[in-house]
Amino acid sequence: MPSMTPDAALIIIDMQKGICNPALGRRNNPDAERNVQRLLQAWRQAQRPVIHVRHISRTPTSVFWPGQSGCEFQVALAPLEHEHVSEKNVPDAFANSGLERWLRTRAINQLLIVGVITNNSVESTVRSAGCLGFDVIVGADACYTFDQKDLNGRLWPAEDVHALSLANMALDYATVRDVNQILEQQA
Image (cartoon, rainbow, N blue to C red; front, side, top):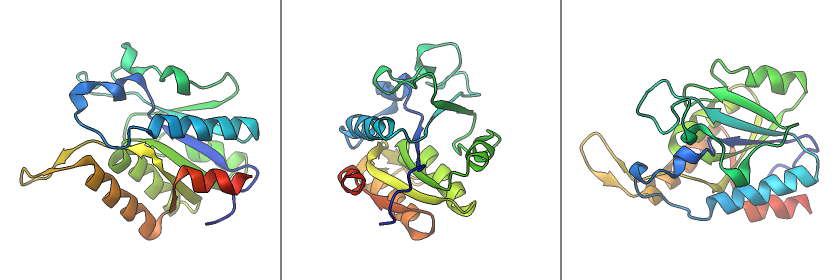
């Protein structure tokens, strides 16, 4: 695993109240929020940069539609006043958000990316970050997804969707590690 630089940024994607809506279905990794909290605590303690990404949907039926509580950050993962918040309207946190510029102006080249949904916003953001030349690490057990039907109507368990998404990211875009491995390297 690449060693973490002192200015490695933790990017927390879409950990908003709306993601807890039961209508989204069955999910994997029930410990994901706790693992994100562990990383957030370590980053804050080390005074490393933290970026909270908030999805603001353009779809009125979305759990992230503006003006309702689903858009708010989960209380345990809410940003502190000095932590950067980046808003997006599409899965990729780099698309039309200014995130790349914010990182480049601070000479931040290493990113630890966690959050939801593994095979959607996390994977699209990781792919962009990798293509932009960032050194990307994904906290595998600090992400989760939901059961998903494919185009033939087959239902895939969230565990399988999550595992395949992590494998996609590990191909060319990121190093994938669990939170314990990441935190052990910090000691």
